[in-house]
Image 1 (tube, rainbow, N blue to C red):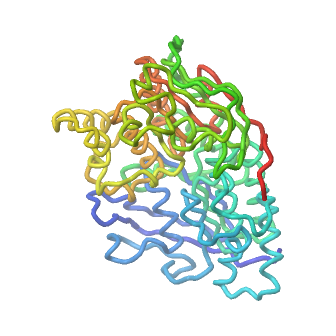
Image 2: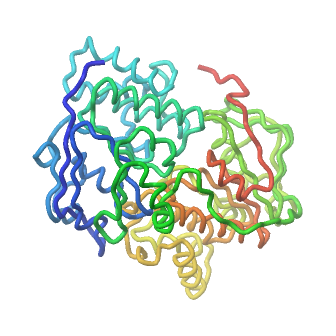
Image 3: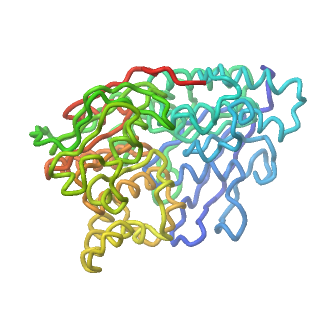
Length: 486
């Protein structure tokens, strides 16, 4: 792989406020990143980490999309229009997928940069191999799991060979093998090209020995701390209090011993899949009152598909899934046959991509969508919305557009939209994505309280600490238990 000219970043009093937002996402930022430097960018959820990466990549737009203060320069010039100098892997990897086939999608950036055709496909193969995404080049991008989409997005950036690589939570939806492969792929890229790196990641231990410097953004603006990776241990207490994940430090949680109750959902000889194609043979599975089931396993094993089946959104490919008497409540035993309105108060779903369930123009209105569809009185709707805004740390964002939130804030809002209808079963796909240490803890305590009140929780997750803190039972799916037709 050929070397490239590493990029430099300089911010002087820089700030950005998204259009329609009262508060700045980032403000008063003074920061210099030297060519070839490797920086781990940390901070509480909502501190502006993703906004800074988008600014460096030149993606924030003009005056109609927000207000800018100060200056943010890439190689001494505004980042907008510097084609190919920055490669960004977005927090939502699906947002970066543009073409229908895996090979074409990875090649897309190279083609836009005018890379000679003879060089493009060797780069594509090298990038896919580097991130461990060993799929046919004509594989459909629409069929990939969330973790596979994450690797695909990274491969597209690696193939472009930019002067600065910007990674926003690049391992959040990956299994342990995928985390290792992505981290190794990034290290190989940097060693071969000398590119600058800025990575936002709550899994600090994954990147601490790869970076030169740690920069912690302050929620109110500016830099809260900066220094070598040893900073994470030297200032561990102060940083942990601000929500930074400290390698090797567990989150303090009270002991908890829930007592599972009666059956809510029962699967017998259950096989799940999509479009009639089997993906995973699950066998017998049960979700009970006052319980939490963690669904784990490698990327592509069928975890999300199982979650959607349990949620009544996909039909079983084989076997049966039946609701218990309390959950069925006169609607029949098969959730897949229920109307959307019936599901609202029975089975709530939090999708892997939060944006897929946003419908309203502001956060408070989003939380009110479900209760309003149930025909609840306005007073009850307002009470539920206010309670959720408080519990999920979203009060100051009540009037904000959901699509302008940080990744962690979007995740908490998506959880809130499901909780607003108070379902008996709650199915969550990667619920801790984008959470800092404080919001992670609050989310665990919130879900524990739901279990204590009788809710059956199903969580699809790669977060081992989360599963240990919440699960009363764990189902580990093996890799691709059923062959999927090409």
